[in-house]
Length: 483
Ligand code: TYD
Ligand code: MG
Image (cartoon, rainbow, N blue to C red):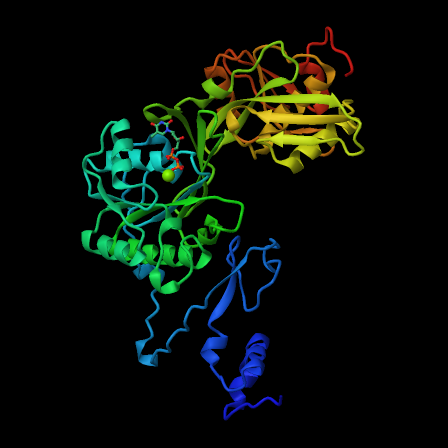
């Protein structure tokens, strides 16, 4: 059938390929708006395409593109409405006073308390303790300020039960609602100083038509709450679940919108939880908060080294390393297991360590430190579900592996830190003073560190120039054997 363009050929020429297809099928229906009414958004990264694709062109995920309504275009403004530009000198910047949440570890990760009018995303696996943490914060905040909890996941009665378990939170205002329009209207009228939305994935804007938790809904909800936070001065925590499958939009689509992204991590089957900032417009991103989940809620762990830094003396494969998390040195037990392997590509499995770093350390051990691992599976684990991304922990990982491979325990009372270079030399780690202080505080006797690190008080500092030297110094020479 010949294509009839009607009276608007220029419009057709502007249509996308898909739009033209629609016209071809229905020659009388020149609904331009219809052709452009849907788009496909990736539930992983939020990228939008005009056509459905099996694989997201932006992030490469498969099967994550979902149909949604295309946002309507902007209306043009008259030139007179344009805004004036401001010189930075004229900008008023009140040094924002921070609101202490009463949860010391949360305040630390936020950079010293909650900033008024900020939007903070708290993400983490279901059941990790996000609702508990934020309810505890609201509990303290409610003593001096108006605070509200919008709950879409639990009923108000369930929240009350939890609050009673945590020791009461009578003054927290609760709204059990999932309709975004109602939530925004209520917040705009009530204007609490702090508000928690638990969770952003349960909110839905009826006019969008897609299911709650879809990319379009989550983005719309976050966008409107952001405007509300800035315009009405409501500091807002958004709770977001992390899921791997595309059904519920991951909080990743929100990361660029919000001021802070806090990640709540840890093993839900063990009691320790780690809170870290992945993004923070008002502070450092490498602060770490450590909690323990108890029957009375989350308890801050003021001294995590005490919990994580107890090695197993006399056990081959266990080493205490001193890593630095933000401003805070942290002693961690690193465990390794080296087992003979028949695999053509032996396994290198690390929990809490960067896989690339682990592969590099295994290679350096084999090439420069006389610990060949080509025929062995290597497993490394960091105690307490903590993740270390800091190069200063390299030496700890290397020594744990060497100790396991040689089946020789590391000398008791010894902690180590230092970066391992590709040539097998050790590089000084940053803030050695701080790390040594932490080792001394925990009553360790000796620190093994790269050359150029000075003694400190009772703590003896043994320095090594290369990884080979460090391995020889750390392992009890007696009884050591090649594994
Ligand atoms: P929750 O805050 O509901 O997790 P999320 O909001 O991230 O899904 O916490 C879930 C777990 O915490 C749950 O398994 C029960 C446990 N928990 C305690 O152990 N002690 C407590 O006092 C509370 C409130 C929860
Ligand atoms: Mg919850």
